[in-house]
Amino acid sequence: MPALSVRGLTKTYRNGVQALRGVDLDVAQGDFFALLGPNGAGKTTLIGIITSLVNKSAGTASVFGYDLDTQLERAKSCIGVVPQELNFNQFETPYTIVVNQAGFYGIPRAEARVRAEKYLRQLQLWEKRNGIARGLSGGMKRRLMIARALMHEPRLLVLDEPSAGVDIEVRRSMWEFLQDINARGTTIILTTHYLEEAESLCRNIAIIDKGRIVESDRMSNLLRGLRTETFVLNVRTPLAAAPRVVGYEITRVDDTTFEAAVSSEQGLNGLFAQLATAGVEVVSMRNKVNRLEEVFMQLVESRGQGG
Amino acid sequence: MAELSATPGAGAVASDALQSLNAARWTGFSTIVIREYGRIVRIWGQTLVPSAMTAILYFVIFGSLIGRRVGQMGGFDYMQYIAPGLIMMSVITNSYGNVVASFFGAKFGKHIEELLVSPLPNWIIVAGYAAGGLLRGLMVGAVVTLVSLIFARLPVQHLAMLLAAVLLTSLIFSLGGLINAIFAKNFDQVNWIPTFVLTPLTYFGGVFYSVAMLPPWARALSHANPILYMVNAFRHGFLGVSDVSVPGAFAIMATLAVALFLIALTLMNRGVGIRD
Ligand SMILES: Nc1ncnc2c1ncn2[C@@H]1O[C@H](COP(=O)(O)OP(=O)(O)OP(=O)(O)O)[C@@H](O)[C@H]1O
Ligand SMILES: [Mg+2]
Image 1 (cartoon, rainbow over the protein chains, first blue to last red):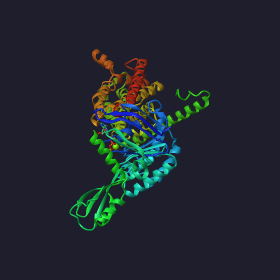
Image 2 (cartoon, chains in turn cyan, purple; image 1 turned 45 degrees about the vertical axis):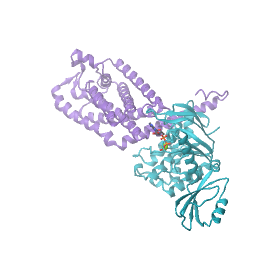
Image 3 (cartoon, chains in turn cyan, purple; image 1 turned 90 degrees about the vertical axis):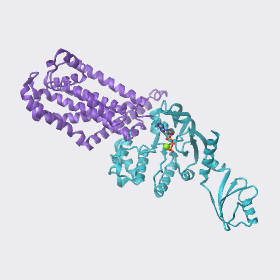
């Protein structure tokens, strides 16, 4: 039984925007799953439906086998959510916020106090527990929402862009933290615009664009399926035109910078052999973009042309 | 529930599960009430003080200064006659005001989502906010009663009736405030009903006078005002006098409370104003 199973989910907002156009998605138990897509793709809408903040137009969804239409209370108690936008009372204290949230999930107050200390400490907010939440920094507010989502120790944790506005150091420690709770059995779904984040954390990935899932695969398969990669080459001697290399497509950026598109079957040896023969000395080389970003652009662009 | 008892021979398990479900719901409900209490106390200058101030002004001006010229009403000193009405007025305003402000604030600040993602069923959320309004109504009602005692001697004829009247009234207006907050899209729509509907209805609801003094058409019109029944039932609890039938008043109040609860619940279930 998957942690999350979604079939034929559609959403048309009252203003006529079709945010989801038939989404099918399965997330296995224990998975660390990335949901990726450009702005407005429908990620937050999908999460909203799963967490009962948005009414769906059609389709079904279930969480650990509990159908959202017929076993809503059970489904809800399995999910913890960290929303994209702040949604706690800014005039309450972090301590009150997390203890009350536990209460809404039916956790007795004594137990809630114990957990509050545990999770506020883990997210480095314990010292700030009695100040007004409005006084927290942006990154602390985001961590507060993570602590709040963990209070009922959900089996499925859904994070909508958890690292937006969080500095690198905190982001790294948050990644470690999420990997840790994932290793202990919590299924995690996250949306992000940091492709590096998805690539380094997640085992499976779905790419959503204009309300449709355009790709859903293991991260490793997706990266392997990357047919061509673009490399940026810097050469020692300035050249007026791109060097001719049989079988490879080379474009000139400036006198000493060129881009080479290399397919996975070709490899790099042929390219370098020919460049050496032509007397072109390469001083450095790098990937043009993050690999996942490339997949992402290919998928989104090819759809853009198709539609 | 059907699902809990579906497994044959699992009666004991099912009743355990039911018990823990009820315990969880009770915890959720009391958490809402605790949070509402926290809000009332945190902003006590806005929640508890104004009604006490208003009551003092009414007693000084209407009770002492004007009341002396009014003389007796319904067989009591004017001050004694209006005291139950003033207490009721503060209960009405504060119950309504508490829920409309708190729930609309939760919508506006998005923290209503904390409840919407939780497994609490909507009837618990409605009950929790209503209980918060009830708490505020009773706290302010108690403060205003204490203020009244400075100015007037208040006999208590029927304690149970008095308490029932104040609880039902507070419940009715708490639910009314919730419905207002569910529909409200901005702060103007939060203030509109209290200013243009509640205040006039309260003033014409027999707080300051006995409707027996009114010409027949005005008396008939007053009987369409639900607040008249609440004020009179409450006054009957203190003084033993009423302009309306007391059992009738309770029937009307109970009907209103149930109807408003069902309306609020239906709106929540449909997600009106809270779910896109
Ligand atoms: N409450 C709403 N009412 C009307 N339209 C909405 C609403 N919320 C979202 N939309 C629209 O639905 C579409 C999907 O929005 P959504 O927020 O799900 O995208 P997203 O993938 O989360 O984007 P982002 O990466 O920017 O967070 C967008 O066109 C958006 O304008
Ligand atoms: Mg979003």
